[in-house]
Image (cartoon, rainbow over all chains, first blue to last red; front, side, top):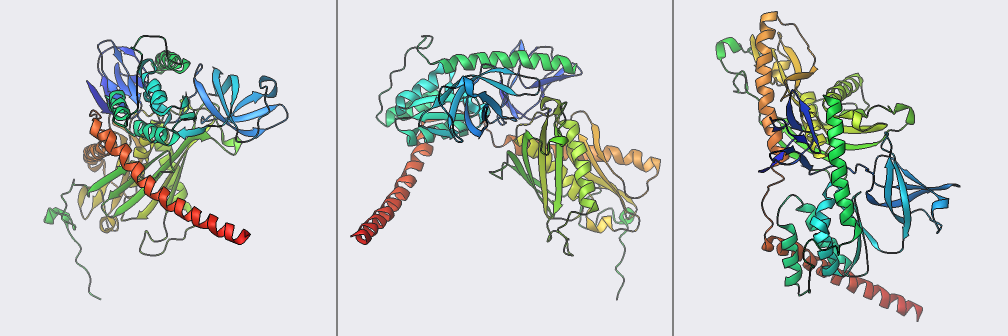
Amino acid sequence: MKRVVIPGEMVSDQRKRLGGNVFVSNGKIYSKVLGISDESDEKASVIPLEGKYFPQAEDVVIGVVSRVVFAGYGVNINSFTESFIPKSAMREDLRIGDLVSSKISYVNELREAELGFPRKMFGGDVIEVTPVRTPRLIGKNGSMLELLKQGTGCDIVVGKNGRVWARNGNIDLLRKVVMFINDNSYKSNLTNSVEAFFKAEGIQINIAPKGEKKVAEESEVLDAGSEESEVLGGAESEELN
Amino acid sequence: MTEEKIPDYKKDKKRVDGRKMDELRPISIKVGVLPNADGSAYLEWGQNKVYAAVHGPREALPKHTQNPYKAVVKVNYRMTTFSVPERKQPRPNRRDMEISKVLGEALDKVIFTEQFPNTEISVYVEVIDSNAGSRVACLTAASCALANAGIPMRDLVAATGIGKAFGELIVDLDKNEEDAPDAVDIPFGIMPNSGEIVLLQMDGLLTKEEWDKLVPMGMKACADVYAVQKKALQEKFSLSEVSEKNVEAVIEAKPKQDKEAKAKTDAKTEKKDSKAKKVRK
């Protein structure tokens, strides 16, 4: 059963596999954050409702160039520290305020992220959302993202750091739908209701049946990210014991 | 001048403001009130009114304040000039700095600071109105704001004042009771789930027997505070399904306003354009 838990609230009093955002004290499992706990028989985890971006390897992020020095560029990825892109990695010259999309290749023990495969983004708009709610914008197997792309006709890149980049298409409509998803991220039946909304607007949607490998790379990133968090969560709670 | 009659709680069985000995003043908390902060809370506790805002974790500056092993929790407790009967000098005084320090240490205990090396978590608590017990009100509000910011924590912090006045052990002293001739005032903050004490100061003297009686009273009162905190944090999120009407209502309500606004601005810009054209002509 799903329920909203607050920090320090017990998630389970039984031994279970540890998911994200939980810790163990005296053999019982407690939540670390304000979030939703979804109890299953073998695993205890909490999905956070609020929070800043926590960089993890393999995340696709959208950065803003904040500093230009001789050797490269300082990039704000909405994390605790600035990341750095050497000039040798970029074909184009960057200026302050330019947008860069990148995949985090490595995060060190000080939570400093190293960016791999940086690409300059030309044009487009950025919509800022709560970072922990971006999985809802992508949906299972990228279903929500596909829906947004078809419904608004935009090219969309969802950065896991809470920045959504979009170009072409109906960006005003996209902004409203994205903010709606952001505000209702903790509710169920989101994808269906957004689909119904687009249909009511008279926009043709034909989603490929689930399981087909038609979705963009972002969805794979989401899966990788969630696995990563499981591994991390387990390691951290072991340290605590 | 006529001397006011000093109340005697042993005889009256009731406090000056009509409360029972172990009764709190009414508390209400609202979270997420300040849009520019990462997390925030507004708390009313009797006459006390407090805002708490959390920023971070963010890079700690100046750099020498950074700790490569953990995050630094910085609390800024300030009273507005109009929060007390006599104007408070806005310059931070000894009391402000002391309270900032003890609140910071209390919150440091509950936050998983080791997850955020080299960063600082700033908590700003501003007292808008006060009537004794403002530091426990601030601590209660600050822990709600931290939870609202999504910062990983072991527990919330629930706090209350406990002590003695007019010959009886009481909970949540107000200004009258704090100024009583035999007053003992103890700000008391705990982690409600584990019962660990994170804030404890004392002004006055108690016997050991009194102390042993008082601590359970404080624990019970903090549990009441915790219930209010929990409700405030949870009530924002109700786990219902999104209905189709819901979506259409929210998304369609906005474009209409936008259209009106756009029409207005368009009209304005057109006027401006035409004016500019005229000028050019």
